[in-house]
Image: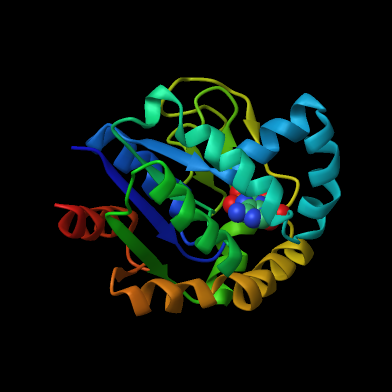
Length: 216
Ligand code: AMP
């Protein structure tokens, strides 16, 4: 049975980290609109050119672009078993568009789970994070160093990358965008009775097991 879900929460809450873990456990696919946009920026596409400055400033890319991107992605074969939406929806119009898109495709949402965290902790989490450029394993300057300095625990690569928007000024803008435009989505799903919350300040493994308890 396919399972489709949304992970909600501000930047730095752990949506990406947890999505990767759930992908492995449930054979479902992480759909991160942020990752898709970064790929567009890297490829130099027209869409990437439009998105770049907005992302660097910590604003939100237009709903139409994002909705089109997700709609195409959901149709691909690796989503047949289900998907985890990470970073989408981010506005109420996106949530409404998602509902109509899913009903057109005869799909439904099984879970919407919010990772709850405090803002100040997010600035510290985000500004220290980086990933292995080969396998994508995530690290942090303070909270999650590789066992051997400068060498990825998972694949042995020595190359790492940091996101251009993971600096304090942009992070503060991303957090305001979250409070202004994304937080109302929690009420949208709360009113429908499908929202559950998990303490995103807990240890990474504890968060994963709380998510699995909900998903079953
Ligand atoms: P993320 O990787 O989810 O933190 O996203 C990085 C940036 O991409 C955000 O700060 C936005 O500029 C843009 N972005 C990602 N997802 C969305 C979305 N669903 N709607 C609008 N902008 C988005």
